[in-house]
Image 1 (tube, one colour):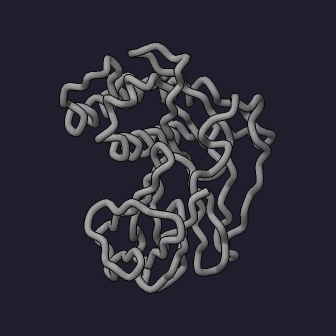
Image 2: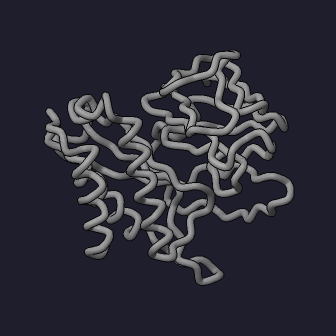
Image 3: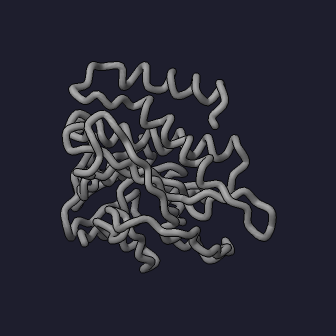
Length: 242
């Protein structure tokens, strides 16, 4: 279970950005607590003695509750993802691939309630200089969810195709980023992508060389459409909706 330090972190996190009144009975702090409890509940040990947890967490909620978060869903996904990643680091858990959190409307979940399902989704290859350690997916797998088929795919300058599932992604040349582009004109943390309800938006993170969509420099959130060409600095990436 999360200790008092983590509990205080969640309270501080959500008291600010999400302190507004919601029509939903479901509160961000409630979702955060459930996520951390699920991380602990799914912990297993592998042959190397590592405490292993899944890398994908799907927050299932009613349509009514999800509508209550509609205008803040990208920010909610970002904060939940960052908090879960930090908790996994602090607890010394091992997740194969980048951890992400997504939201899913489930008509079988009652108003004010939340259910968390997990799975091990595919691990995007790192640059050739970085060895990839392959691990088997935890069992059992959950029922089909929004993570089974990626809503979108990015084709990187190397030709590598990266599936974009619901969640929050950092793009940059830093090897710790979710999507790594090894290009000197790309900032260490250049931009971010948020996929929610099947739509993907891109926003620049005050990068040195800026981010463009179809040749136009973006300011704030930019909704991506099938066939859009994104330039992170001079690195060109193609966006395709599934």
